[in-house]
Structure formats: structure tokens, C-alpha cells
Length: 605
Ligand code: G3I
Image (cartoon, rainbow, N blue to C red):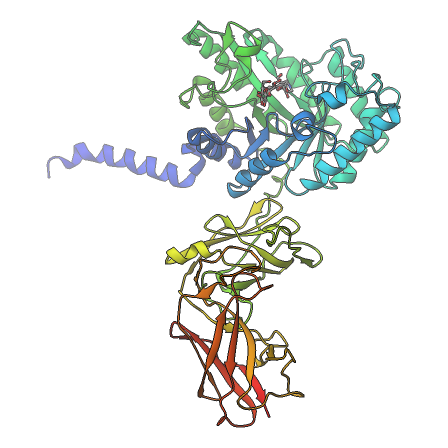
């Protein structure tokens, strides 16, 4: 037992460390994001719109709770031509952010750069330009309502001397407003497009108190006084080491902006340093850079209304600086190998050391649609718990969707896979859709699931996907369609001369009835997703099809696709047994030995 006295201090230290860990979880925050979220704070990075570098994406998801398209929501990338909006990259950035609980900033409705040629070289009157700008802001702002929580509505509208920059939007030819009138109009349109998004004016070289930031503050004060919807000022902070002396001025500027009740976002922070031909900076410069990152962060974090620090990119692997400032680079918190630099540690230390301030609650994350596996059932029998290839199904209960019922229009002999921006994926394959409305979407299970034991289902609305649910795949799950679409009672059926068979018009014994089912599984030729059958050979279920009526075996004359039916819909022609009882007789169709559920009947005279 002699070793105990030696061991005791060690044990006490370990116990203290463990206790510290338990009582101050943030102390050992491993990421910028964890450190930021401890303080109700947003740490962001501009997203370069590329999805090919998994390390880039994974690191950004781990370290940041905010992203902003570096370019994808600028006028030119969004609007390559007047008729065309290109939303694909912003949609993907937003969809990825939504899955990771990240918030998204938008950048920027109005800027004198990133203007498409059709606009820059056009000969529009101010009234025409005003219409174009209004259409742009209302279209883009509405599309991203609830998905982009803050917009740089207007970017870089002032010259360094505090005058308004001469631009297409102001006076070349402008949209017909005087002074800051076009900026005010843009903010009003942005509010009209999105009643909730935070609306920012964003600029560079106006981080400290100077003639430019005076002009911006003057505009903001005027806007606030007149009820023009503005929520904040973005300070870009594209800095160099010489800005070490700018901190006191930054402090004063943040104070006077937030004293107006406006938020401040540091929107594009990077600190460029001299680099050699290989892009390597000196240790001394990286240390000085870290000091500046720390000072910016400390200063912002003092103010409850300084709510976000975003760097313009986050890894030196992707940065605009080297191309724009030859001989400079290494401007961001992580190096080109995604390793933290002193600047990263400085930012995290600032977040960990930040005084607790009464900061506004973080904006709500992008709401994902919610679905449940049990909500996916046969469109005929409403039986769930599994799906069959080509099965016509209904997803009930999705929490988001089109406000009014949308019915699929067949084009090119195919059903669409998108109805009002609602889509249903099976293993990432978008399924053909029959109709859709919030809470009820009908689709056809892609035949490709035939080779799998299970399928991963995701519902997507307006580009945002639900969390996945997994369902077993079965070879067949037959369900008969009934006249009242309840899955019970008289089947939707016709006599051989296409007369509907109903309680009022029952079928005679010995006659042939035509009825319809889904869930027969894979067919030969193999089913074609969403295609309307229009030619032979008709698709016939791989499984043997048998039938009983009133419990008596019924001769199946035909079972398979039919002209006008979509692949996955099966017509069954069967003869009513001559010895069956009269009245409503239960009908059961089996495919490959799997029987349709009880409930459907056929009225027999
Ligand atoms: O995507 C096209 C590509 O298809 C084409 O082949 C290529 C060559 O023409 O151009 C590509 O677009 C480039 C785009 O970046 C994406 O890489 C544009 O030419 C290029 O001008 C654009 O530069 C961006 C610049 O804004 C102008 O929009 C920079 O990446 C971006 O970092 C910079 O960001 C600005 C902020 O928006 C506002 N504050 C200043 C900041 C730095 O300039």
C-alpha cells in the first residue's frame, strides 16, 4: 500500500479534471461550432458551391453553424438569362445545410458586380430595370422563405468617400429613385418576399468609424426612422495585418450600429498575409493573423447584437485572396489540408472566453419535412409496413407539401417525379407521382427496388429532404382498388363490355369481370417507372396470379398491364364462378402466393 500516498495527488488531479469537464462542458469544446453554440452565436463560412470535396463539406458541417453561398445567390449565377433562374447550387447548399442544422445567409440581391451580360449590356429604362429587379428579389426571396434566414439585400453601394457608387442600379440608369431610394426599395421588396428574413446592408472598408461607415450609418438611421425594413449591417472585414490598428474603431462602429438596435454580422472575414511562391506564410505573420482574428472575435462577442462572424471561405485551399492579391494568401482559419491554424485557435478561444451576454436566440433552423414509415401505404389496400416494386403507394402525414392538390400531367407518356416541388425518393431515385398535397402524396415505387431487401425512403419538399425511413421490400403486396377508394367494399370493376359492376348493377355468375390492382411486383418485360402502357408486349407479373370469389377459385383469364394504365397498375380479368353465392362476395387476388387483404367484394346477381 506504500504507493497510495504517491498516487493520491494524481487521482485528485484526474478527479478535478473530470469534474471540470462535467460542470463546464464547453471548456473542452472541440469545434468552432460547439464553442459558438454555447454562446447562442453563429460562426459561418462562405460555401464555394462545390460538392466534390468531401473533406471540405464534412469539415464545414462540423465547424460551422452557418454557411453562405460565396457566389451562387448572386444575380449572375442565379439569372444567366432573363427567362432562366438557376437555383440548383443554392438549393443544394440549403439542402445540405438543412440536414446539418446549419443556417444559411443569402448574398446578394443588388451588387454592381456579378451582373449577367443580358442585364449589364441591356438598354433598359429605369422603369424596366425596376421591374426586373422587383421580379428578381420577389422570386428569389420567396423561394428561399424559411430557408435563408438573413440576406445581404444590397452590397457595396457606397464609395470610400461616403458618396453613393455610380452603378446600374443607382444611376446607370438606376431604377428611377433618388439617393438611397433604390436601396430602400430593395429592402422593401425583400421584406415583401420574405416577412421573416433578417435584411442586411453589406460593405467593405466600413468596419471602423470613417466617412464611409458614417454614410452607411446615416442611411441606416434614416431607414429605421422611416420604418424601412432593415435589420443589420454586414461588415465584410477583408483585412490584412495592417488592420491591427483598426480594432478600437471597429469596437466604436459596432457599438454605434447596435445602439440603433441593428444587428452586426462580420460577413467576409479573412486576413491576408504575405506568402511565398508555395503559398506558405511565416510563423510570425500567422501569429499576428491569429491576434487579429482574436481581436475581431473578442470585439464582436462583447455586443449582444453582434450575432455572427463569418469568414470568406474557411480553408486556404479555397480562397479568393491569392487570385486577387498576388503575393498574399493564407488568409483563413484552416490551412489547405484542413488543419487548424493559429487563427482557428484564436477564434475558438475567443468564443470560449466570451462573456455571457443576452444575445438574441439563434434563428430557427431550416425545418425538415417529417415523415413516418407507417405513413407509406398501398394506394389500393392502405396496407403498409413494406413496399413492392411498382406498387402505387400513398405517403400520408408528411408535414410539408403543396397547399392545394396537384395532379400529375403525363408528358411524353411518363408521369412526373416532381409535383409543386414535392418529390419522393426511394434509394435516392425520385418516384413517379400521381398527385400531391400537403399530407398526402401518391407515388409509384421504382421497380429498381426489386433487387433489394429494403429501401430507404425520403420525402423532399422545396428542396429540403426529410430524414430517411427504411421499409422492407417484398416481391408482391397485391391490393385491389375499390370504387370508393377505401380499400373495402365493391372493387372498381367492369363487365367484359365495360359496364361498371356495382351494388345497383351486379355481375352475373359465369360472366367475366375486369378489376384493377397494384402491388403485383416486378413484371416481364421489367416495369418502366412512371410510363403509361401504350404498346405490346404488355407487362405481366412475374408471380403467378390466382383468384377466389366468395372463397371459390375463379379462372383468371388475364393479369397484366393494359393500355392507358401506368406501369405498376395491373388489370385482372376473371370469370365469376357459376357456383358462387349471390350478393357481395369477397374477392381475393394472389400474386406469387401472396394474397390481397380482405375487404374488397364484388356484387353478384
Ligand atoms: O462559375 C464560373 C465558371 O463557370 C467560369 O468558367 C469561370 C471563368 O469565367 O468563372 C466562374 O465564376 C467566377 C466565380 O467567382 C466562381 O468561381 C467568376 O468569374 C468570378 O468573378 C467570381 O469571383 C467572386 C467575386 O466575388 C465576384 O463575384 C469570388 O469568388 C468571390 O469570393 C467574391 O466575393 C466578393 C463578395 O461577393 C463581396 N465582397 C467582396 C468579395 C471578394 O471580392
